[in-house]
Amino acid sequence: MEFLNEYHLAGLFIGICTFLIIGLFHPVVVKAEYYWGTKCWWIFLVLGITGVIASLSIDNVILSSLLGVFAFSSFWTIKEVFEQEERVQKGWFPKNPKRKYKFRK
Image 1 (cartoon, helix red, strand yellow):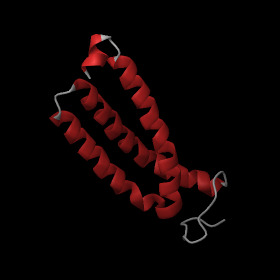
Image 2 (tube, rainbow, N blue to C red):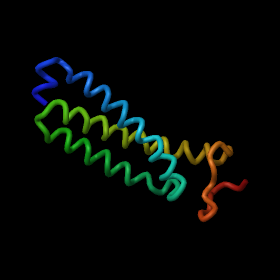
Image 3 (cartoon, one colour):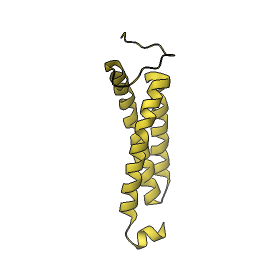
């Protein structure tokens, strides 16, 4: 971590990690909706709250920032899971044949 601060790379490192965290959440949204539907939203709420608490508890700015990004990406995922259900309803993504849906199609 000292290397990042010494060469003023902390912001770049945080940016790259933020990009990766957000990018990893997209397939998580798709898979979570496919297997569990919208009833898994509370898992992301718990992850987000845990991430906020961890972010506030850590002194290291880089790690604290990344935990904050993780926390608010988790909160954003709640919205995305419900939007993913709409995408499935429109036929943009496949339905899970082993699950019952609220909508008919």
